[in-house]
Image (cartoon, rainbow, N blue to C red; front, side):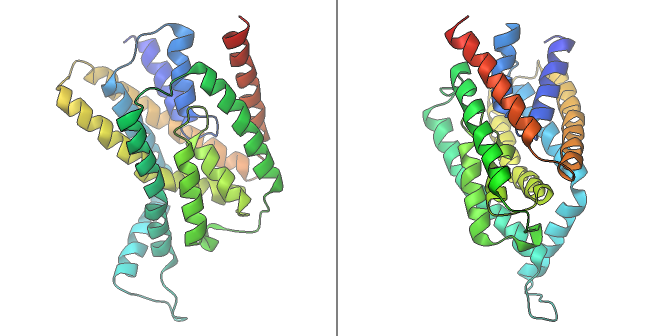
Length: 272
């Protein structure tokens, strides 16, 4: 791989993993637009590790509170009002909400492989879920915070996350859509989406890492390390920008971007 390919792939993965525009869809489009060869499994693993590192770097306080809260929950600690630890319950909800995505991801991995990697599919999902994102953001109230998360809400959001295996959907986008429909504030919807990404991204990285270990390939390690570092930096920047933006505005710019990109792709698929 050239350094240009490494930089482009790292930035695309790091940025689009967290913005509601679909990382898988953009990664499918990169070789389509550039005619570059497949980047290889080692680079895929590194990109996942890099984006996971970005979540840990930005949300380390939240993650620490989840770990401590889970420990308190396991020990049966309650507050003066007799309530269980809220952070501990949130940690449990995140684990439960991850199950649907793990099941669907495993079934797709075993039965379809790369069968969904289609530019035409990306084009249509870009447009369809742009409409869904816009509707949910407009219709959803902003009355709930992360402290209001309930098991039923988490399960529905987790089931929504499983839909993101359709390239062009966006894992972060569809989970934030589900949270917004339950009335969660935009920043809290984004926080839960990013925290929910930790086990999902980790599971994908472990699966790809196992495949890499089986192949015994080490030729692409330099490229992988560079991709991982750059993906982490790009991902951290994307999270910071999105969280700052959602404190004062809506998802509309991402809706417009998805519609425009989907329209351009449909033109190339059906006309050009």
